[in-house]
Length: 216
Image (cartoon, rainbow, N blue to C red):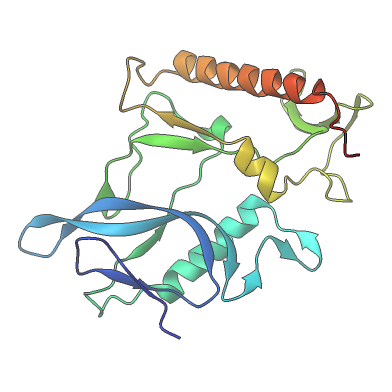
């Protein structure tokens, strides 16, 4: 089965295993070919759902958390790229950052090859009714269940906190900090998240108050 996917208006293409489903974007890299820097298209994978017909959303009948999928994708990146094939677009794995580790004084993410970072995808990988909170007294994280207002120190053993694919995609945000009037500041980022949360909560209230349709 020929799995080569041609790229519009260029001679570059991909060769992926059959039955592979990825969430990815095309980017322009600044590639150094020993003579001068030149732009080159590349595919940057954000997440993956199937690789060679293997569902990587689950492992041993349990949901695979986003961090573990990222580690698996790093192995996939090494296996799929063929440096000797100059006609194939390179495949990279997008950098993943936890929000608490972000340094808003320097959002210029280093990467090799060099690309221009235009924004951030923000994904919520813990689902309702769970939240991860920070204790102000001892600065440690814990899991809080909103439904009955109980808290535990470690992750739930039944994996009920792991967000499934649909809510994770529906609750993801894209913060474009190369367009618009907002500068890349922590205060602007927090305001952006609060605005998106209000939009989601407003939509949830609308959905909860919709009258049931008559199926007769």
